[in-house]
Length: 215
Ligand code: BG6
Ligand code: MG
Image (cartoon, rainbow, N blue to C red; front, side):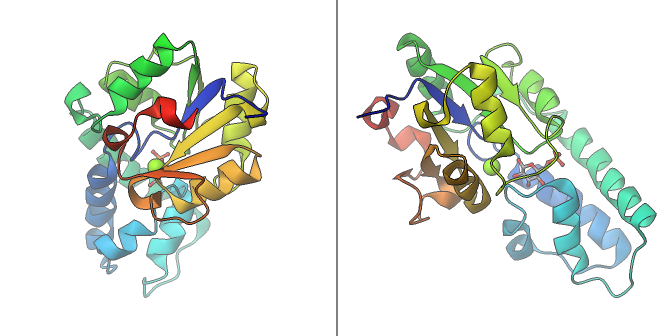
């Protein structure tokens, strides 16, 4: 291949660790308190989407209009519930195949990074014991435009010192697949993005794939 893969950039939620249910339960508690209808189908639309954009999707079903200050308070309340829930995450909550994949890449000398929209990335990495494991971490705290904008992946590549065309992104969200392609990177779709026809490679989970076959 013209451009060898020298670095792999992993989305965090839904690729390395399963936080979907924590996000769902936290949004659900806030929505129930506000009397806003919210279910797991709507929750699917929040995958890979930033906190405030997720709130905007939830508020589509709200009867009242919220001011910007009220929206900030709702997002902060949800985040409080979420932070409490992710406080019980352990390395056991890593998704199948994730740790083996990371080890394989390390052995091959391939750089590894996180590219996540989540501003809770540092907490989650600490909970699963990987806070010093990655060569670079780009997250929601360091960017101003969330996926499908490529900013977070371009930052991760930059922190790795690699050109986008030498990076492979692993994503479970359609917004993340778009972001990787927009950044000029190859993308492996897993989980929810395994069926995305735009993903160049696909696997149900990292446990179903030998990562060296897509490098
Ligand atoms: C993404 C999740 O990784 O992070 C989204 O897939 C979430 O569901 C987004 O909304 C932002 O997360 P946080 O932790 O900053 O609220
Ligand atoms: Mg994700």
